[in-house]
Amino acid sequence: MTNSNKINTHQLILAGSSGALLTVSFPSIGLSWLAWVALVPLMISLRGKSLKNGFRLGLLTGGVHYLTLMYWLIHTLMTFGHLPFYLSVPILFLLVAYMALYLAVFAAAFAWTTDTQPVCFISAMPAVWVALEYFRSFFLSGFPWEFLGYSQYRQLTLIQAADLTGVYGISFVILSINVAGFLLWQYFSERQSSSAMQKRRSAAAGIAVSFLLVLYMLGYGQWRISSIDAQISKSPSSKIAIVQGNIDQAIKWDPAFQISTTEKYLALSKSAKQSSPDLIVWPETAAPFYFLYNAGPTEMVIKGVRETGTSFLIGSPSFIRQDDHHADFFNSAFLIDPNGNVTGKYDKVHLVPFGEYVPLQEWFPFIGKIVEEVGDFKSGQKGQTLIWGEFPLGIQICYEMIFPDLSREMARNRAAFLINMTNDAWYGKTSAPYQHFSMAVFRALENRRSLIRSANTGISGFIDPIGRIIASTPLFEEAVITRSLPVLKTESFYTRYGDVFALTCMAISILLFLRYAITNKNIFTKGGPLCLWKSNRRSRNSIKN
Image 1 (cartoon, rainbow, N blue to C red):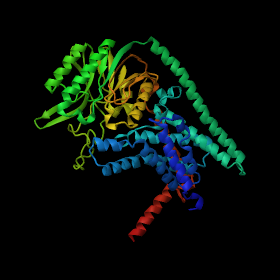
Image 2: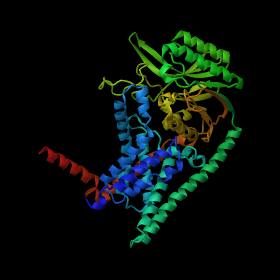
Image 3: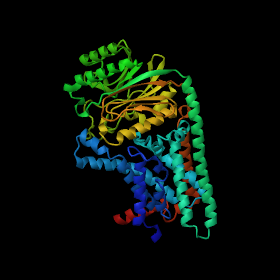
Image 4: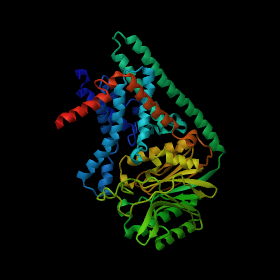
């Protein structure tokens, strides 16, 4: 290994700064413009590095980014999981290490292919990034928290193309600009070399491609906003109210507070009556009892619905008894008509590992759940909608909303509204509620549906089919807000065809790897993956001997 290939302190600082810049791009700080240059320092540090050292630098970037982005997990584990600090920190680091692996793989690929022609490079690297984001969305049940494109949730004109590509297309464009920034640095840092003119032309072509792509996205965005606004002006609408009860999670499930919690939500709901809503939406498990099973509080809710005189959508746990010794539990939403009749029930589909069920419990019986109020939950039916009058409703409970395919399935099943019922009290006053809310914007505009979000402690709000945040609530305050929302029946390209763009990026990434595996000598020589694998195997054998 040459000295130029070793990692020095300057390169460690560059890689670490990329991780910090990425985090600052997301809420709650939200300097979204930094996302467009955040990865340039990492890319500079990768210049001339082997695949192995590229992986290490990417791991550092990912570690800094996800540690500072998801620090709130410690609060959740300590406050509601009742884990001591010395156990909460290693769990956070374990999750961070897993998430950082994706950035490490990207960095290794970047280092390995950095001498590619810039025009190809500026499209190949974004494709690799998107492929890794897409893989993270489903691998090990998936954790698609704050993909790069989500940082732009307030840049309405730019993100309209999400109705074609999903959030992945926005990530692709941001990556292409980051690569363009790297090419600019490369040109100016090497402009005295004999091949400067050739590199200048190649870099200029690559940079032009990336900026043309941005211009296309902006042009498409302006046209799409105008066309969707025209549809909204001609569409029917419904008046929806959301209730934010601000119930302390520490007492929510205490039997002594169940009645007072229910009374509070009913009182807030009755205060919305003066705005004549067509539907009142409560958050996830706002009714902290088994609705339709616990007779007293159930009757209280039914009576309150009748007195309010409108439809309700409430969150409550439920169960189906299988026999005298076994029951299946569900995290559910109940639709109730103005007469107090239950007209539909949705059961949460994508459950939270270690929060609502314990994966591989038969092999690891000593591992328990963070939430101990009920037994392990079971999954409901994917894509199920609830019929409310003439409008189907697409319900998503808690972090189901961060999975694009769940919203898409409901939109394909003709959901007129997307409704996210959640309880973000778990996160406390951290940046997590802001991050969670930012992702909801994309579910609305991907499928061109109005989105209603009701959260126990916030952030609750309304988002229109263009992705505009019509109204939102502050954290940890009682709130009742009512808005009239358009009902669009249009079916976007993304709703109809799904993650075609992300799958294309994955296919491109596989083909790129195969191409380099066949034509690039680095795969068999120092720094290539096969060489590293063989070297590691020889090292293990020598240790054994």
